[in-house]
Length: 313
Image 1 (tube, one colour):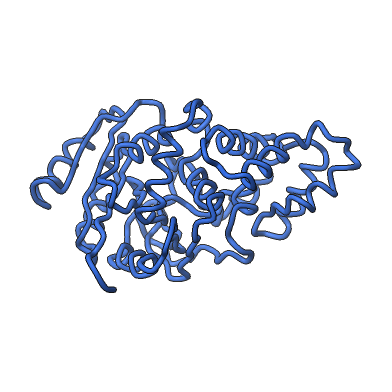
Image 2: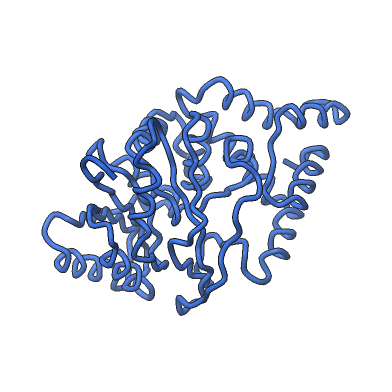
């Protein structure tokens, strides 16, 4: 790498995370890439979370950790608020979950991958699927299809804990969130899914590292599972049949349409996706082919097409 090392603002949303938080903070302190600062937003923890953050701040040095009160409306709202408050403008962003364990090279690999990007760009990596104790060597799947807007509209294919945004992508997210007239629509979805959609809609680079960068802890308190653990396939089927998946896709497309400066292609695809129910059932297959949205898993992609055909999305 040449030139100055970018500063990375690590965005950590916490709420009663004391059981696992020490492991995550220790893994941040062990990063081989040293140009980072932590911005933690706590959503009213009643355990030792805040005390642990204060102790960590004292350990890593003055001015390296900022702790603020979250909006109190859930993890998505907390992360969106962190994005808006992040800065300075030159900072890169990395999302951080309170219960994971980063490998020491996570940030260094992200910077190496992103350093030559000319415009907005996101880095993400594979993860080790870990048990409640943080142990596990099973690796998440590689994408089998290209990453981009047509995938992002159908699937949350890049988990936030694996993502790093360069300065241009971070600025784009701040403008998008700050410029929306419907923050509730954004908060009804997921911050990482929205980020993937916004950056891909803007034509940004999506860079995926085949080397795992963290241990993604699976336990009963996870907001969203990895989709890789045992029993997740059955859970996804139940989610589809219950209508939860279709509602999630529509929520994210609605959130995307609420953003300013979305771009003609992104707006057209999101609008047609949401309008598909109003079209004759016999015209839907042709519209779906034209839209070209897809999931990574072939079987799940066929299910997606059937859901759209029958008006379940």
